[in-house]
Image: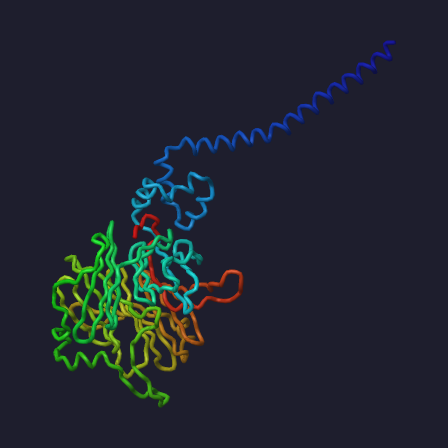
Length: 430
């Protein structure tokens, strides 16, 4: 009996041990999901209990490209775009790395280059829904872009929020020479220069007043001074087309009418005394400047002879007016950046593209369209045989050729002809 009971007890103890161990394992396996769920709930409650103002300030400082991602987290974060307190938190961010709104010949979709993460983004094309025509960008400032339709209407848009405002129409049949834009804390201005040489007309749209105005100062180009000459005839000739023979014996027209994507390109800077100066190129390739407060005109000396083949553009880098030139010289091409010396009134070279990068542009008859922002200069090089985009840092003297941008869903490469810089700000109001 004892022998039988012994083994029976051992069997029961072994069975009981297994029974005790397996439920514990089952409980542990069943408890793990609960534990993870509890942790997940704890994390959510930590975000939920976080003060709303602190959360908005945190989200306002994340990279702008992440905005479209965090909106999909929950309904609360998605509604932040309509929150006045969140917009205020965004406005308290002192500065953001710029984006460049790229323009190609077709203008069929909106592509931007993000300098913060060095990537291309495809965004919704800002347009006026009342017009069934494609508008092209003509100016930018702060977080806004200014578009002009083929019908002559101006639209100011925030490319991030796709909010647009259609400006009152300017009725004129005279040619437009320059369009510039400047932004302030809670407003912006669009400046248009048009007319026949030597008399120009300037119109200024002030968003705070919601109307166009014409400054009551003299805009007669006859008063312009260019060195020792001030005659009307010499000034008028500067805006005419020059014909000459190139090295190959072909007749070439020296006409500085711009690429359609930057036909009205100009830059606007401010002096130490708060005076705003607008710069643009005339058809002769000379830089023309106008002091908006005093109504004073100035025409700078040309960098190269009028009989030279070159492509030129103006950029604004931190308030400095710089000139970028693509020029073929000694069986090679070169891109150089120049600045006018204030006291000597002569051009001084600032930077030059390394020969190893510029040699490919020789013989391509390329055109350059450039824009500047802070210490960066973006150069779009385009021809029927070549399309490149280069980003230059004038402080570090660094030159970067940007990677190719492909059309979504295909292997077709986008061919950009120009760009417009803007600061990606959700709070920028039109």
